[in-house]
Picture (tube, rainbow, N blue to C red):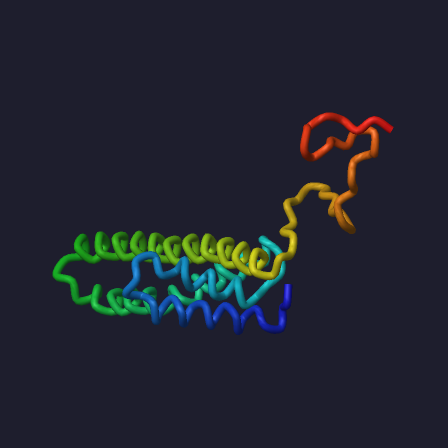
Length: 153
């Protein structure tokens, strides 16, 4: 993971989420942008995508915070308590929406980047990569191209 640019990439992804907010599920696009810029492996893409979503959620959460400012003027204590509970619930759902969808976008962005680079993604298992060209089968197992019969040595 390129840690010196992670925060910058997350901020760029958050700005992309904000600019594309007219598109449904825009946090996916913002997380994908952040992960594409970040590079690295799948975990890095998800991490920077989630960070991008947390940053993108700040303006929405700021609006909810402003709603808290008007609750003390509620006509009844019960109304204020229910209002606080509803706003806290909306706060948690909004944060989850932004972070979860941006993390999904980070996974997609890392996939697109690794696919565009032609590099292998780490799958968590022990993968053996071939280092050269394909080996041809032994001569006694080769088939004749026109008849489909085996060539005998």
